[in-house]
Image (cartoon, rainbow, N blue to C red; front, side, top):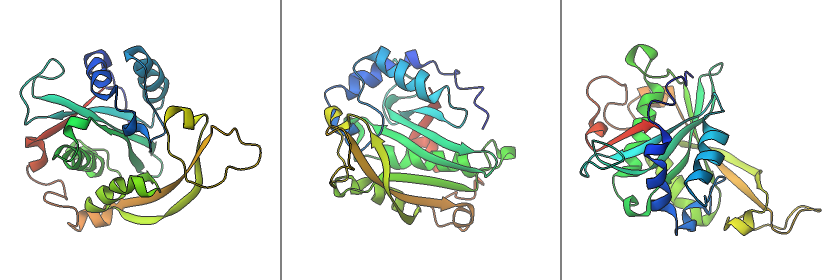
Amino acid sequence: MDTTHNFCFPADRHAAKYIESTSGHPEIYAHTIAGPYKSVDDFVTSFMEGESRVDPGMMTYAIIDKTRPPSDEDDEGEMAGRISFANTSTAHLCTEIGYVVIFPAYQRTHVTTNAVGLMLHEAFKSPEQGGFGIRKVIWQAHAHPGNSGSVRLAQRMGFREEGVRRWHRLIPKGRLQGKIGNGEPLPPGSDPDDIWRHSMLLALCWDSWLGGSCGPGATGDGPNPLTSACRCCLL
């Protein structure tokens, strides 16, 4: 994945809005690996500089709600969250949609569905069409009843369940960060504040996408109706 354009949209245009919109809402990080963040500097240093921009298989986008008026963050609308491609393999033409954070004010709106749809279009379109030519897109969600919304969203977008990865993620001191674990006794020798999670693995492959099971314009031909309401721009 070519990440040379990662700096086209400087994080300093979006980071302040990100912190303003997520501070005071630690619950949005309860089922995630990253976050919460104490400040703009913490977000930029630990996530943008410490994870996204140093990983050649990761690209992070600001989600712009184009149904809202222009703002300081974007000339076409308001920033509504963030979303990433992650764990990308150019050898196997596979990527993952993850690190999804939707600001509380935009949850249960068109924003999440449109943003994920735009990422899928970008992934599956051929390089000649301006996309990445990916053959498989993965979605991983904490396999916990409180996170069922993430699984349902993926299923609505055409992802199919492939299984559960037990004891998949260790979050050191996660309990102190408000993280929710798998509810099972910790392994011997664990720090009592550590958190483990099981992950539900779902995937959407090229044949299902081209088969038209994922909504209008799934082949990438013709205008994309999603772009009228939402846009994802690189952080």
